[in-house]
Amino acid sequence: MAQQRVLTGITTTGTPHLGNYVGAIRPAIASSADPGVDSFLFLADYHALIKSQDPEQVRQSSREIAATWLALGLDTDKAVFYRQSDIPEITELTWILSCNAAKGLMNRAHAYKAAVQANEEAGEDPDFGITMGLFSYPVLMAADILMFNAEKIPVGKDQIQHVEMARDIAQRFNHNFADVFTLPEAVVDDSVAVLQGLDGRKMSKSYNNTIPLFLAEKQLRKAINKIRTNLLEPGEPKDPDDSTVFQVWAAFADESETARMRQAFAEGIAWGEAKKQLFELINAELAEARDSYNRLLDDPGHIESVLKQGAEKARALSVPLMQKVREAVGISSMA
Image 1: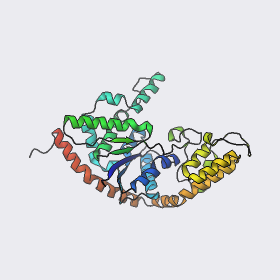
Image 2: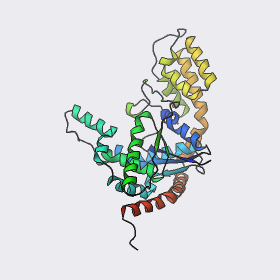
Image 3: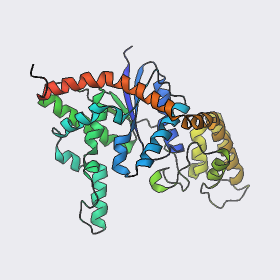
Image 4: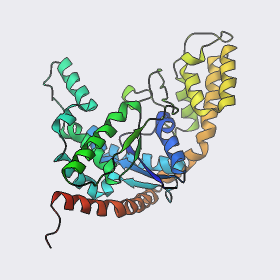
């Protein structure tokens, strides 16, 4: 059976949290173990520069995210795990695609439109504070995807546009020059949980409502105790479908444990007891990986070595593909 190439990028602008784990990391690692999947996973550190002008934050986030994937069991013999900035062909391809991408397409990018709208609502110039990085990042994202002719791109519903833009850019290039790029397809897995944060909204760094993935036990317990609940007393039935505690529980528990907790809510379990059990459930799943994560952070040389090996495997594909691109656009050797 032919393998299907799947690509996932992780922007290096923060510390991984439980929402990242449930929504992206855990399913991607599970997918990478499938013999029918050819997984490409990368640290999107060029993308990070759009959001952060703090060099140490980008460096630290890169270490933490790489350590997270390795600690959680990513098999780098099976998956290609690399750092975006270690692939110089990415930036070259970005420029070539920029010369072929329509500006109007960039105007429709969600992030750019949201920034313009925020400026207009604040009475500012529409482009106040907007960098060319923010405006043109869909082209960089297209280069990430098209460089390795990825067929499937796992995304959330709010990210489908990124893949559609990459597909549009690929079609335009293939039509204008040569049939070089595979047309990517967005894959939205509705079974993957979108985890709620401490305040009940989607867990996100933007909302400052996250629970970092590898908190020490004491800090993890404290964080879980901060999950917002209502004022229902012990013994009063509680609605599991309106509870962040239950929603997070369901993302970590199996079917029988989920059913048990649902019954406990109906019987009026105390919020303190529900949070205690939630802590024990999450801690049991993450304790071993947390130890590995801390060991990896103490050995950055090993992380660097793994990423360099991944870059070598990635460049075995990116170098010949860029040669095809150069020949297609007319900047190849004259000899």
